[in-house]
Image 1 (tube, rainbow, N blue to C red):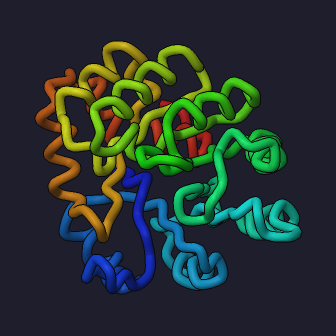
Image 2 (tube, rainbow, N blue to C red):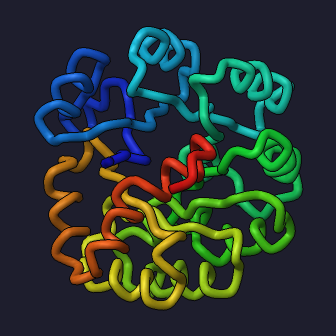
Amino acid sequence: MIVDSHMHLGEFPLFNVSLDGSGLDKLMASCGLDKAIVFHPDNSMVQRVIADRPSIFGLVWANPREPDCVQAVASFLDDQNFRGIKLHPLLDGYHPNDPMVHPLADLAAERGLPLLIHTGHPIFTLPWSVEELAQAKPETKVIMGHMGHGNIIYINAAIDGAERQPNVYLETSGMPMHTKIAEAVNRVGASRVLYGSDAPFHHPEVELLKVRLSGIKSSDLSMVLGKNAERLFFNISG
């Protein structure tokens, strides 16, 4: 079972990439992905794409700076095809440890669903700020998207934070060092590291190879590639 926990729908001309529903179907088939977790600021568009695709699920993109954000997110979460909440403080311009994020963290905890937060870029998505949110909301399952991304200081901070906070999970997409995946598994535990690709910005096969070359044992590999996501997003144990 392979679950890609981090995929974007939409057009991104700055990066010369795009991904729509049919493209996602083809990408999943070619890379052997069993399930995908997708998102975009246009939640209604995501809802349309995932409605008739039983292997593709969404996260509700939430911007706490918008009026009535919590109510709007709660409404989308009533659709069982949405399996959590996505925050991108860098794009939307707020700090993840700002108290205005707390109602969204509470909502995620109430629904038993995770909160996936982009990490790795100053000033708004530093791992320490995400850790502070997780510490303030211990009942909320917080996923550090990209586990610090491309800066070694932020990667180490993400692993350190997850080691300190038992409700923090690390997602691998876009983080270039395969050895740090192994370190995260060894220090934090295999149950709190999960695979993601960040498609279409990164190719799922490249991101899969990074996890597979990390040197973790086969039982841990199966957890990182799929079982942890099954448990986090779908409450499926095994």
